[in-house]
Image (cartoon, rainbow, N blue to C red; front, side):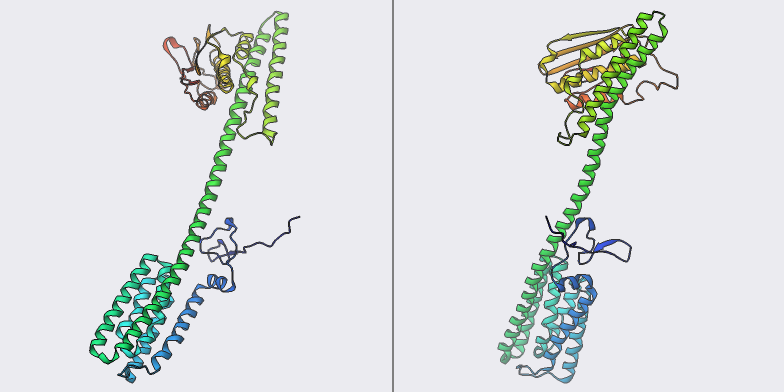
Length: 434
């Protein structure tokens, strides 16, 4: 047995009523089943970003202000107004960190400003805020922006150090030490920020890709279901429509004839046709219920349909169908042979339904290698006006024929030709229907 484990995520409703994951990035989808972020601090950071920003700003302030009050080794000590000025500037720099998530570049500019405007003896008090600000640039903007900010700040500090050194040559050691320590603080903040930012962007890309895959999976499932419904509808249409049309024609003939023996023969043929339809329906339902068969398996046995059976069925119903075959139809692939039989069957069904006065229905099949030309022509097309029988082309027969022809790499054309005749035609290509 596999032990049950508690869920790795906790659904929560946000202010807009949408469900999200506690500890997940904003916009994370519950359907992804994301695990909660590891560690107490990471979960706290994710749940309370504003509180986390306040903590960062206060920590930066506590680390920076004492440096402004401690006497440095600079030959010229700061005056009390300079010390107060430095504390105010540092407080402003630390306060700007509250906006580090939304305005990282602006926050870095404000936080780095004390590096070049404070007296040289108070510059070390301003090293912490720029390091935290450049971390935010790397995380919330980009690696390129981070390196540009680092290079700009380092260059400004170098210019400031050179100017201060020229003004006070005795303080070169102190100024260089201050420059190196400030650059190292910026570099550490940049490297940590780049690492965290890259990981953050990588996870966001994975989540976005997973969400896209979920959408694509649902779309593929809907497309697959629609295609399967179309396939089932096409097969049932071919089975039910043809056999019922033959049954109706036989029943009408049996009713109209005064000859008892012919009526009995017609009713016997009705029973045979109905049994054949039931057999095909059972075979199709068996395929649909079999979990071991491939989803692309034919819904009816390939051998269940043949051109000869379709022609004989129409002839028994009293329609003048003539079959002409050039070449060996048995030599073509079984799948193509099945498609040709279904196209002939549906074409004869359309002729029986919509051309009851036809004096000739010609079925011509030409086999050339692995290509099949198919023409079914009747001479009895007339418009139907009764509401019980829709006009030609209003049903699903012709779309089904085109789908079958396309399935074996062909095309189909249907409509009136010279002399008022109607012809679904399939010239070559591999069972093309023209």
